[in-house]
Amino acid sequence: MASDLPLFTSCPTFLHFPQCSDPATSTAKALILGAPFDLATTGRSGSRGGPGAIRQASANLAWEEARWPWDFNAGDYLQAADLGDIPHAVGDPRAFADRLEQRARQVVATGKRLITLGGDHYISLPLLRAHAAHHGPLALIHFDAHTDTYGEGGEFDHGTMFLRALEEGLLLPERSVQIGIRTAYECSEHPFEVLDAGWVNEHDVADCVQRIHSRVGDAPAYLTFDIDCLDPAFAPGTGTPVVGGLSSDRALRIVRALASLNLCGFDVVEVAPPYDHAEITSLAGATLALEFLYLLAAAERLASASS
Image (spheres, helix red, strand yellow):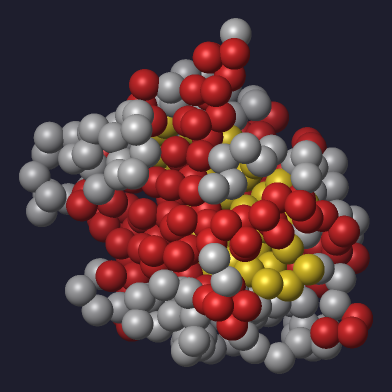
């Protein structure tokens, strides 16, 4: 997945991947989709610019033959392409959600894996609907400062969608886990296991990974990463930053250790370029999306070695 283009060139697709318009005819096994939406934001808006900023930041990652510390080139096992962004009428959140779900269903029906670039975190709800329609109820692996299971809020709210997903039967709560939480929630009645930021920062990465694997097991799993899981020192460009979060290194090491799980979909959300500095939040988002690709490539590599 390497490109010899200069790092300062425009990067209209993720990692300079080829553009794709029809998932059914594409030879790629993984597809990138942009969801430039922030009408469900309750804090600072701006994450509608996330997909473009993540793609541009990915130019800084495109030169490596093999992404450190992986010992292989993901492109040797996994072709990828960029579907561009979801088009929608500005100011119409319902139309956006419907179009995003429809596009995701098209991708998932082909057996390809989808990596979506947000956009505020509400986008996970239509994505979960699409993935659950194909795979059945899902384990949720959720990196965030907030649980996003709050009961207040309207239909389109980036703090309520995992409660909605649970009510719609999209999730397996007994197989789901939230990592990095450091805001208030009702602990006694909470449906998911929580590895709060304090616990994650105090324990070894291996301990955290073991807890995730034990919880998720072999269930089909959807991985969603709100960039505010990272401490604002590592990701200032987001709408609702909360101090005391994970470092970029710790989060990446946890994500890399999830390759053996049955991962069926991914998103990285809440990158808000207006509040970023030197593109460090966008770069974190791009790096996570690349790590998601390596998780898929690692699974393909293992499958080819076993056949």
